[in-house]
Image 1 (cartoon, rainbow, N blue to C red):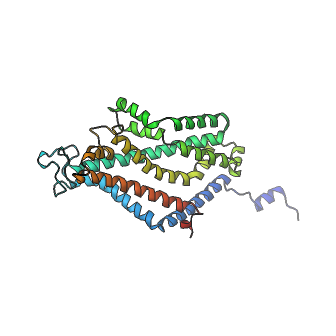
Image 2 (tube, rainbow, N blue to C red):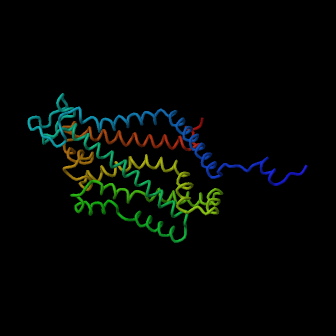
Image 3 (tube, helix red, strand yellow):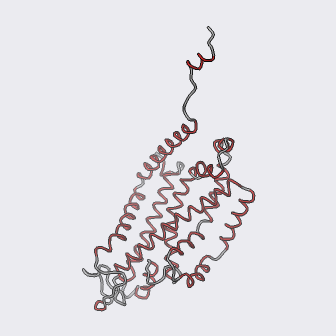
Length: 314
């Protein structure tokens, strides 16, 4: 029996589902499932979990520890110069009467925040520059690669040393900016290569055919597919940036007095390292422990994300 077009429409109505919404829902579900899998793999790595716990404790000590003492990092106790750790001065006193505990935690705060903020900005610059270069290609790619090559050959330490006297009276944020500018190039090259590969995928080509703007494609399709790399890169950059800031501050080119970082604390106490080790060792210990924890977390994340890693196999 034949049916009219109207009857056919009533019997088999077209789907009202939004294909784009369905696709986004599927991808969100896949991302959630993958996130749970990565979390499960990470939690099976005892070293990585222990490093997270220790790093959290370091953050808590850095920001809550100063409330346990009535001494400030710029206070002086002339009656107890070079005194060892005791009930009043938990880490002792330095050679001019400053409380080592207060100065160490103040320096730890500054090094942690500089390392974290600079690492996020560094990875963000690498993600944007690499994705744009890899997706657009041609002259945009040539320009970004030229900038990367130029920054790689520039002596960043000397540039920071030259700019330090000029910027010494300004906020420590300038140091974050300079560390970020000179830290994104290697990751940017990796992201560029991944973007050149991802832009040939079917879903990217389909989005281009549907008229989706280039920057929307980069934001929705390219960068999310590099999230694993970028997360690991942030964790690794935190440790590297803390070491870079500490080195610069140690030589007087980073955080400037009266502000304090781990580098300035170590620099001020280096001449007492063998005679009064309590003045020197606590800042050095926190520096080593923090960078070690970040490094272990980065390795654990990389193993959890990489399915070919032996430690990530279920």
